[in-house]
Length: 259
Image 1 (cartoon, rainbow, N blue to C red):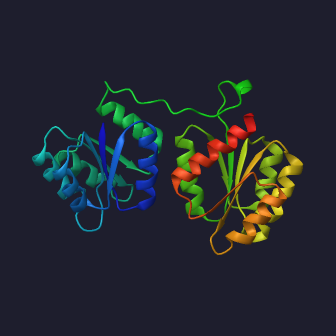
Image 2 (spheres, rainbow, N blue to C red):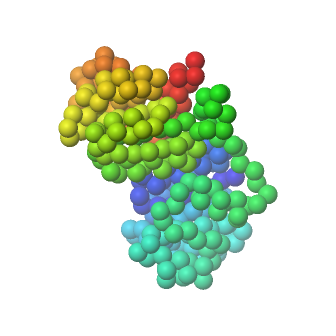
């Protein structure tokens, strides 16, 4: 099934595209209605997921154009809480088949697609877990002082079926590790109060079986990442981190834990 995603927020485009492609869908993206409509004129899409409020041409203008172009295309309209009431009602009037209020978690998105296409079975994304923990998803802790990164990573990994906790604070991270066993910790190397350079050795003391992915911005990457490996990180990633790279690295690191 072919899906076109229209949204001006890059993080949402990346998150949804990766999650939907993992489910077996083919996904194209556009930053606004005008760009999306041009794509829809060139090829057929089974479903269009679109934000209602975008720079340039938004969803309320684009929906009637899409339905006029091909009435069989399903339209899933989205909008943030600040706009959702009247805007989403207007979207239905203009032809949307279903609406969602942002923020939209991946399970809720997939459920909405199932509602629109009940006969389609998606691929089940495998959850990497310890065989002895049969039904338990891998537990991940994200430690980073950038709230946007924490939120993005949490949404992506939760959507993949992992159990995810987050913290913006190094000391809080150590408290959390003492109270709960994590299979994987993703930690920024440069944070207030030390970051990974300080915390990784402590993690290894508290929970030596826990795998660690160290992250850092390019301005620090070279020396800091080498130091991360020396003090015990299993993998290192330089920011900005593509979602596909994050997911593949997480899976590879957890597989190391199983072997």
